[in-house]
Length: 526
Image (cartoon, rainbow, N blue to C red):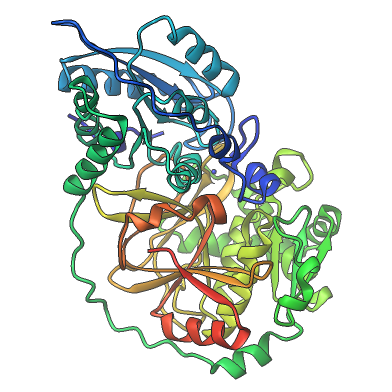
C-alpha cells in the first residue's frame, strides 16, 4: 500500500490561506464548529449481516485543481481519492464505504441532509485543500467522524480546524495526520466500537490510541554542536529600540495599534507602487550580475528562465533601496496578493533569501507578526535568519515539517557556512522564481511566534533531521523531530494561525529571559 506522500503534485482558493488567516485574526477559524457541536448521535441497532455504512467526503476545490493553492495548480486528486477509497475498502471489508466531494459548507450541508435518510453511520473527511470548510458541517451530526489530512495539500486547514475541535472537546471526533494510508485504515477500524454498541466517545478514544500506538517513537535528541553568538537580554532590548519594519500592503497584524507593546520596534506601511518604482530604478547591469551569481551558485535551476531571474534580482535591489530610504531592517510584502493582482511583477522570494543571508529581514505574505519575531531574534543572535513556514505534522515519522517557498542558505548567520539551494518556480502557481534551501540536519532548532498584542511568545523546539523533496506544496521543507509531545503540538493552531518562524540554535534560555524582561508569557506548544 503506497503512502499519500508518493503522489507529487503555496494559496488562492475562494478564500486563500493567507486571506483566511488575515481576515479572521487566526482565532475564530473554527467558530462554526465551536458553536454548533451537537450531542452524540444515539447508536442504532444493526441487523445480522448488516454493514456499518461510512461516507468518505473529500474536501477540495475540484478533482483537478483549477487555481493556485496547496498542493499546486493543476494537481490531479483523482488517483489519490481512488487509492484512498480502495485502501479503506480492502482494509475494512466489514464496512460499506460510499464517497462524495464537497467544496465548502453549502455542499457539505446538502450531503448531511441527504444522509439523514440514507443510513449513514459514520464519516471520514479528508482535507485535500487547505481552507474548504466541510468538516464543520460533519462533526455536529453527532455521528462518529475521522478527520484526515492529505499532507502537503490540506495541512493548513487541517491543523487550524482540528485544533478548534480539540479545544471544543468534540466527543465524536478522531483525527489522522500521517502520510501512511495504513494509519487511516487502522483508525477506520475503530468504527467497530460503535458497530458493536459502544459510544462515540469510546470510538474517539480508540482512534487516539491507534494514532499513538502507530506513531513513530521519538529518536534521541543528541544534536550537533552549535555555539550561538548571543546578545544579553539588555543588549538585545537596546538594539531593537527604534528598529523599523516595512509592511507592503495589508499586514496580518497592525503593529501600530500595539506600539507601546512592541519593545520599541516600529512598523511603517508603504504601497506596492513604492517598491515597484524602486525595482524599476534598479541598475540593470547589477541585476544581471546578481542573476548570474544565483544561476552559477544554485545546485539546480529548473523552470525559471534568465529574464525571470533578472526581474527577481531587480526586486531584490528595489527592496534594498526602500529599506535604505526608510532606515528599516525588515520588509514584508503581500507577495501573493501583489503578484496575482499585477501590483508587483516578480516574486520577492529570491530577494528575501538574499536579505536573510545578509542579516537583514525579508518576510513573506506581509506577515507582520512573524516579521516582528524575526527582527527580535535576528538581533538577539547577531544575524541568524528566521525561516517563516507553513508547517505540516506527520505522526508516522514523528516530524513537524516546516514548508515555504523561500529560506536563507546561511542558517547560522551571514558569516556562517552556506548550504546548497535550488531555484524553482513558486510552487502553488508554477510561476516566477522561488527557492528550495537544502538546510543542514542534526542541529537543534527553535520555533517561535511573538505576539505583542497578547504579550505572549509561542515556543517549541525540534531537531532538524531531513529535507523533504515532495513536489506538493512549498519548495523548502525542513523536517524536524519535536522536543516534547507531538500530540500537544496539534493544539495551538486555531489560536495562532499557521505560520511559525524557525531559527537554528537552542534558544530556550535567552527566549525565556527575554520574556521575563518584557513581562510576557511563554506558551510551550509541544
